[in-house]
Length: 264
Image (cartoon, rainbow, N blue to C red; front, side, top):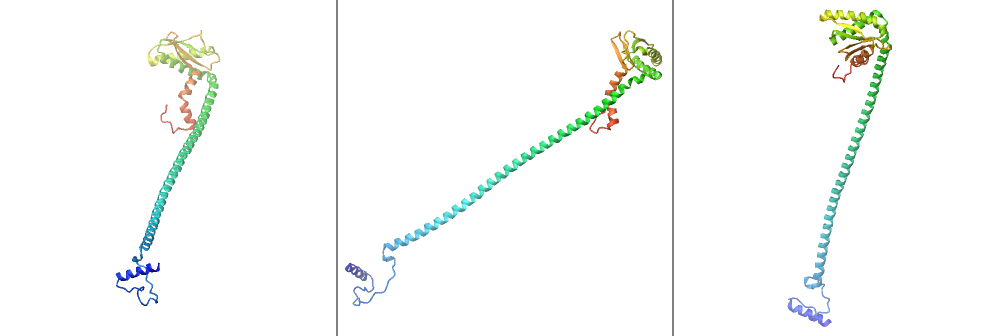
């Protein structure tokens, strides 16, 4: 083994212009330490290349890992923002929906309460009107107690029938106890009718069909051979007033209605 080493050293000494220690007569002296170079052999080059490649691969791996981490963080933030935005939109939408439902429910409740209150007010007003007309109906009979006043009322009722019928002879239905007052009122009405129109008219009491004794008073004028009649009894006139005079009575009692556009 020693001989082979020496042979190699001798060969190198021959090839290079340097002194070979193995052939030097001063062999006993220890040779100086020489640092390994690229000529030391393929083993050193392989190790060096492996170290470089390992460092390069490690550096590349670290940079790649860093890029992946950065990209993952960016994607995470984007996805997180997207989810947060979706949840926020869902919450806003749900809140808006509930708010609309609450507002609608409140409006319905308010409208219902207002309608119920309005109906109660209208019901109370109608009840008051009904009580007024009922009280007036109970006092209808008092209109016939004053004979002179009652005869004047009968004259106006009969004269109205004369103008409406415009016939020479008409029948008058009245209570039996009012026959005398009706006869005088008819004569006075006929005179005024002739004065205004120049025509004669006669009102004859229809004794076969008198008005019920429970009637409050008044007269029915019958014409057209019994086919047409004008009911001017107190009860019928009051019923007509319930419709025609109701708006005026309401305005007198409760004031003008600001929501009413048309007045009868």
